[in-house]
Image (cartoon, rainbow, N blue to C red):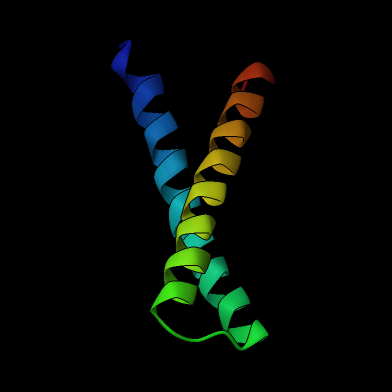
Amino acid sequence: MTDQPQRTKQFYRSCGAIVGLALGYGVMSLTGFTGMFASAFFWGTGCVVGGIAAEQLFHWNSNQGR
């Protein structure tokens, strides 16, 4: 029973990273950057920021009693 919140937290983080990856790609396309360095920068930043934001959302939801 104690593993369930951890799995949910990991699920939030993974989904946030995927959404961040897509947003990073979108921002990179909209700004017109191309190349390997730009891809690594935008996609990596998107994954990290998305994962952090999703983890904060998880903590906020768990503190609200949901």
